Image 1: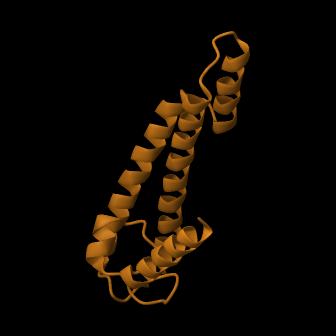
Image 2: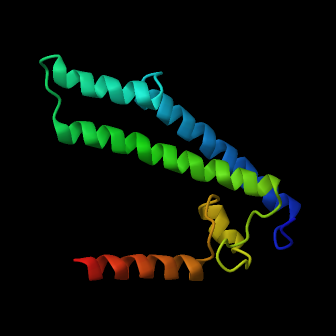
Image 3: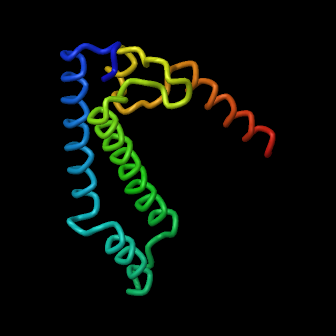
Amino acid sequence: MSQHLSAAQLSLLEAALLQRQRELQSELQTHLGGQDRVEHAREQLLQDVDGERAHDADREVDLARSDMTLDALRQVKQALQHLAGHSYGLCIECGQAIAFERLQHSPEVTRCISCQSAAEGYAGSAQRHSL
């Protein structure tokens, strides 16, 4: 088990993750209107054929919104798996402990601040060079 987090801290973080999971599932269910992602996307595309041509940008925003929610849900589920597997709270890059305060703020994070900063710096640098 992650040695740097107490049982009380782990319990608190697990509760936060489970609450976030419920919120994301509810948000996704509301957004998709009870359909699965594929059915919802199909309905969006069919609106173009029905004479009420949906704007491409509106459809893209709608699909991107569900994609973002699905990605956030995936991150939360992954964090819960790490919690069950006793690797929760350890950076996936360097293996060092992620600060409890960081986990309290975003319990689904998988990198310590140093590694996250490096990853964002690299991604930002790559984007600047590709322009």
